[in-house]
Length: 93
Length: 429
Ligand SMILES: Cc1cc2nc3c(=O)[nH]c(=O)nc-3n(C[C@H](O)[C@H](O)[C@H](O)COP(=O)(O)OP(=O)(O)OC[C@H]3O[C@@H](n4cnc5c(N)ncnc54)[C@H](O)[C@@H]3O)c2cc1C
Ligand code: SF4
Ligand code: SF4
Image 1 (cartoon, rainbow over the protein chains, first blue to last red):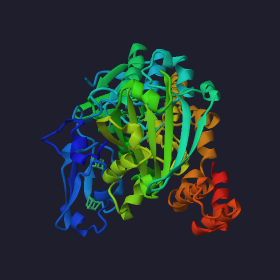
Image 2 (image 1 turned 180 degrees about the horizontal axis):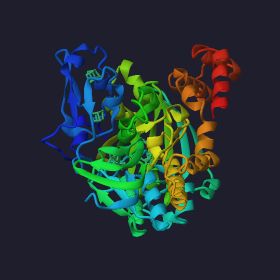
Image 3 (image 1 turned 180 degrees about the vertical axis):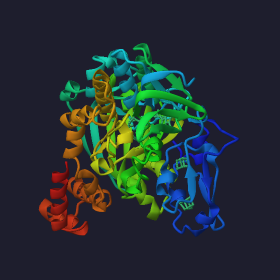
Image 4 (image 1 turned 120 degrees about the horizontal axis):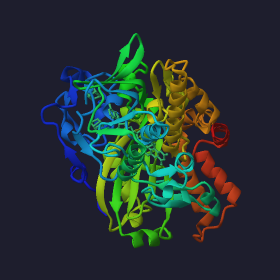
């Protein structure tokens, strides 16, 4: 069995993306000050990618674990669960 | 939903803790609303894979006859991994059958359990995210979701590890990164027969394997593998605090774990059908909020009721027992007409008198012991070196076993250090 890229893995999952309302919002001013950027290493969906001094985030593939919320000690993000009926839907779990 | 209705109890979250609470309440004739943010119970949930059956057996005797459990575990393995080698301790025993444990996939399992609550008379509302608790002079009166408000004598917060409800209500602060671990998992589909041949299983029996060492690059945590009927659950759990200084992304570590020469042949030919992630509470008693409040009880992961002992993760059996205990406390409170913290306090007492808080206390030192990096970093290498020297015959003149072992121990931190860690380990478990 070969390694799968994170895109390939997320491609196996079912998502109902809430296009109107992102459930995670970054404050780029804080992210730019954050030297360790633990979210990049910790996000199991690999959604945080360094960009310039800050990070960019594609919330559409979020697995809703809450890891980024916990490791972000600089409080550079606002996090909530997606609105009811939206987000990831595990068929196995 | 209208504001007119008033329930005896509202349970937030249809995981094992919430569904069991709702089941017990409904069975006792109370009017219960079970609210779940996922489109179906289980659709937001993931676990490693193994339910210790004892606490659900108490609530629904013989549950596994009808529940969608996968395989009954008959084979337990712990493996110390280095880059290319593995040293395993492998246990098969008929005695495991006396207190059976089962692999589960949560989407199906949670739907079944919430269905039991519905059958018993609970009202299940899915696709509804509860936004906050309604409070009046400190007492919890109900819940708000979007524009809707619903009232109840008691709310049971069974909303899992992130427990936004408890946090918003200032019952608990931010979760510190050292009190939770990130779990990632792949479900890898394989034909039933292939799984049974590879793991030496029969039709209903299963294997549970835990891994320590290289799979987390020595970071606090480990790997797991569970056999389901027609798939394998494979993943990693790593303490979230480790990522501040980690060199690799967890996203990549899980794929490298799959490539380990020990794991490869076990999953060869399989198809990844799902990739998931979830937090595991692992702060033990140190992270536990107070569990009884005026009009509110906290159960399961939301209460931090998980044991991570280094060789096992147990949360589901504690979640179920806490859900049952909370339901009993609400039933007692209703009889007495007192839903204050005092009126609900039999919940705390019941947990203290049961395995839930007793086991949490027994393992209270485990989280600290596990913070020791030698356990995950040095000792797997030490195990490998000692075992390899025991079994290798290469034509060089053999060293006495005692001597080669001492050399290995010295290289991996020294005898005193090992003895100290072993002592701490014995005291922690
Ligand atoms: C990788 C991993 C491996 C594990 N391995 C094991 C194991 O082998 N054995 C074991 O016993 N335990 C294991 N655990 C722990 C176990 O999965 C948990 O302890 C257990 O699922 C907790 O049950 P719960 O009902 O308290 O919470 P959950 O199962 O998390 O249920 C919470 C529910 O609340 C819902 N919810 C949350 N917020 C809201 C809201 N605002 N509104 C409406 N609904 C909401 C969620 O969608 C969810 O359905 C593991 C955990 C992980 C992550
Ligand atoms: S950890 Fe927080 S502050 Fe730092 S880069 Fe990530 S989101 Fe921004
Ligand atoms: S909640 Fe989990 S999956 Fe979603 S962005 Fe945060 S770390 Fe990544």
